[in-house]
Length: 405
Image (cartoon, rainbow, N blue to C red; front, side, top):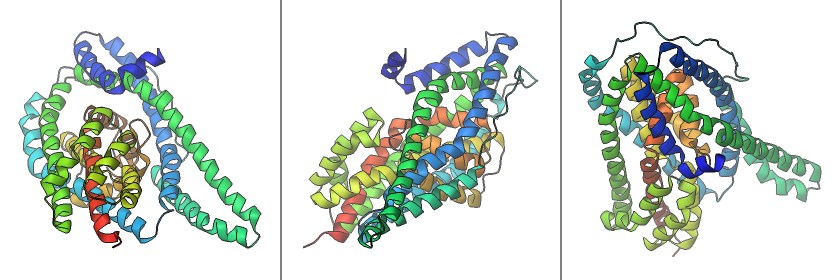
């Protein structure tokens, strides 16, 4: 059964779950719907328990890895990738603040009132998290940066005859690498396989209570805006790279098309690295710079994903009537660009990492988080394609700054 699920893929399962939830929401009785509401309540408690552990398990080792590198080259690459990710997210917020309110308002008449009472689960199980989200974030940053700093002292410690101290540093990192493996396995073997059932329950409940048609009507328009934005992001990235190097930006972008199409098909930044590397070199980037920047940016440059998450989060805030001020979303985007370094290599990694700031900064409920997961996965490949194609633009700029001779 597990092999069959792997062959089918998560996106088709999510789409099937949404369609079945919409169809059966009008057919099943309240008793059956409450069965899935009960499952969703338990699963959301488990997800809430896991979010701080996901942050610690994925972010700390990722920061530790990034903390080792080639001095100014590393810092400049990280800075450009981070600023571009934050700018793309703020671009989504600015565009959304302009366009989305009217879209949401035009669908207000579609808010159903077929079932006046909120469905309650048959029973509830409380699974309190071991840490709150902000404590987990601070702990992850502290440990990640600390391990990276101690790794620099490892050779010095051994040179001074402090082999035991140096060994303890490597053991500490090994503990976090093993913990990351446990968290990754929990996501891929427990959370991801149960997500279709969870999302089915969300859309089943929304259909039963008459809310689903408004959600669909709004996001049908939002997805079009997101698609246009991701094209615009690529254009400005390569316009900057082309202007910086005095080369034709459209030609540079055209050369990255194979990487874009590969990412569109695989939905994986890591799997696209060989193609991104080859096309970046075709754009005239030196082998050394390309070999350094492309794998690094596949980990830290998430402009397309951040834009998509921010646009969907703003839309949910508008639909639910929750606060969505610029200072709040600025705080959210600054944190989002950091936590998403944990995304590559983990199924649904970007949105899983984003659950922490969604909950702690924007105050999203478990149902809102589930809706975010469904929307993100439905558009996952476009965000990934935007991310990896933009990596080529960053590599061109870094090559111009640091090329020798």
